[in-house]
Amino acid sequence: MSGHEAPDDGPLIHRRYVFGLLLRLCVNTAGGVGILFVILFFALSRPLPGDYAGVFHALRNISTFLRPILAISVLVYALLACGSTSALCVYVLHKVAGPLYRMDLVLDQYRSGAPTRTVSFRNGDQIQPLAQAFNRWIGTLRRDRQRWLATMMDAERHCLQDEATCRVKMEEALRKIAEDMARYR
Amino acid sequence: MKNHALQPPPARIRYVNPRFQGPAVLAFAAIIAIGGAIFWKLVDVEFQRVFRQAAIRGHYTFDSAYGIIRDLLAWRLAGLFAGVFLAGSILVLLIVAAARRGIGKAVDSLRASADGDLSTPTGTRHIGEFGRFGGKIDAARSDTLASVMAIRIEAAALAAGGIPPAEFRLRWDELKQRIRTIAP
Image (cartoon, rainbow over all chains, first blue to last red; front, top):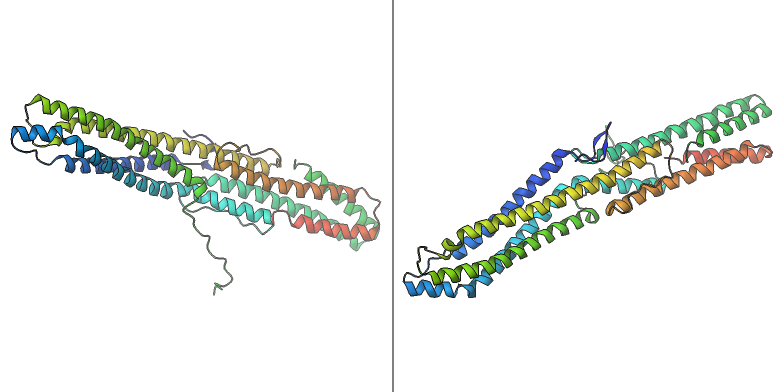
């Protein structure tokens, strides 16, 4: 059941979270069925008339009011169960949906060229390895950027000597940067 | 003393992401509605039959209609619970599997990006909402690759020589500025 797991960063979605979701779903379903039982119990537990003919006729004619009772009780069950399950879905799945939304914003921010900060999710959020993988990527890019800039600045220092040496060092630095960038494909 | 005016506002916590939670809510609602409809249909037919038989049998040993259908109702309710819970559980496991697969691919893709692979697609196209998310990651990687490639071509062109010193210096400074825009 583990599926995609990051060996160094832990599972994407913890088993405890899945079991918690299933347990809540179980309680929710049991509650809905319990409400349906209570409605039908109260609707059908009215005492039947005392005499033989009265009971016979009551049982023969029960279908006239049985159908609306069933319809209403099932409708109430469906509405309550749908409402509570929807609330459960929103409450439990936000541990996945929230981080996804956050990453969406971070990716938009990154593409717009605005400074990107390290991503960290809320405590208890799932899919933590996503934030770690993104931070690792951005970290690698920043390290590379710093190295390229340092190479260029190192070459610029030779400009204090003479123009020819400076130019040679600058061209060397550019070749080194171009070679270094070749790892990006 | 901290200057609160300079601090960025705290990240807004979003509990509802309709693109992700909406289909899940609709699927759960469909399971409940289908379960309720099947229960209604079965119970209606069976209750009619049981009440008719009870009326004809003649020995009325029960106080209420509930006494006649008690066992049948218990079984049908148990069936409704089992059906809805099992279908719901399968749906939960499917959602979790889709999330693991979709986000797993996104994580793999970001890890590959850290190792320099910015062109292999994330491969989340057919996993619902994760397809759109994977597309965003691919777009970000593609932008980065385009930027790095442009810088590399310019660096190689400058390194090739034959450029007048004034122009070289100008393009050198521009290149430095472009490198600064990578992962700001």
